[in-house]
Image (tube, rainbow, N blue to C red; front, side, top):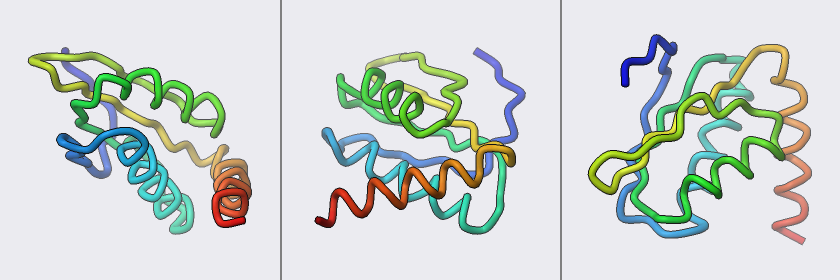
Length: 102
């Protein structure tokens, strides 16, 4: 599958199991949002729970999951960070961090 997304960074999270792939992707999204960057984070993961976990992460974080497919046991996921969502993303991730650290 060919994509014309503006991939800013690629995270190879193969070998990691839930919840680590989503936590590492969340950190990358927050870093992009903190810098005011937009674009797509490409994620490679082989955890069988990754497609559902990333769909839930994007749905609850105001992100768009542009790609979610598998080949050879590796899932390729593209997460879009858009400028208009930057404030929402930063706020939601800050709240999640407060909850996780409570």
